[in-house]
Image (tube, rainbow, N blue to C red; front, side):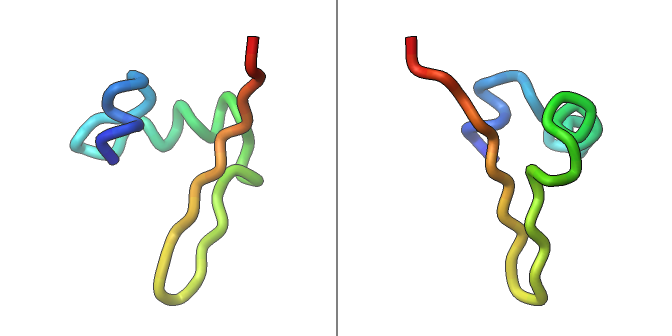
Length: 45
């Protein structure tokens, strides 16, 4: 959560989830019974 806050992609209220979905699609999320994984692709410059 802290990483997403620092990147400006989410807030404590969770509204940033829509930002992630709009930018990266629902494929960014993997939801299982005991965890949620969010993978955000990036390019090294």
